Image (cartoon, rainbow, N blue to C red):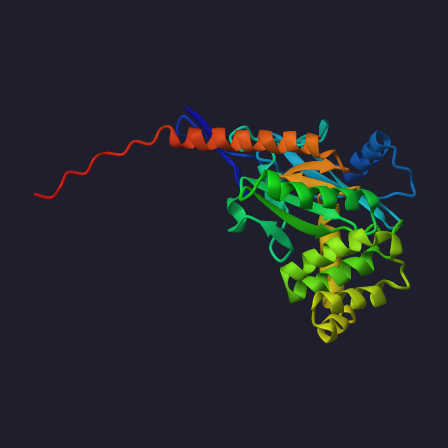
Length: 309
């Protein structure tokens, strides 16, 4: 029997007929040559800033992860490549394992603690784990937000958890970051207040401008019964801005390039897709979850316990 043990620890170990085989140390590649090749492959001109990580074990013998970051002005993205030990072959794409859900690794990379959420408790028990990276000034985000808020509780009561993550697109949306900061301030008072803010600002999106956002948010907070003094102080403090910046940085690490981007059990879905189409995806995820649960329960043997004499 041959069994491959995966994990974050290095080195990866291959068990084969009782012999331990350690994957060789990560290779030292010619970064200048690889960068030149990748610029040609991706059509990145000299104005694009490019940086390559050190190769690290991928979990597959002979292949190593190479993360490549590219940026220009305020735009940036990160690409994952797999490179051979001799540096001659590169694979662009995702690496999947067949002994776990396809996007389990991606789901594990997305942080959900400390972010607004609705749905089933405890957090990790719902079979449908959804995370949306959104922008309060984005029209498509508004439409998706309305669809999720209206349809998820009716279609999947007790079966879903939805987490909201900030991704303001500063290049095209001048007040999106300020709106995200205000959302973090509402969340600091309560999760319920955040979701009221979420619905309000999307509904009033057409009325909001960079120069009236603060006044309108404070006016809304008063009608919503929030703490005005605490909210105003929060807007002026650096902490919520840092939280939004951290969310944006993580989105870049996940290679998100547009809003909204919704993750369903780690599966990325870019753009606002019709509810009927999204529901078919959610139904399939539920079906696969049921099959996985059934498979894990099918082979458990319980021995009867004899009564004490």
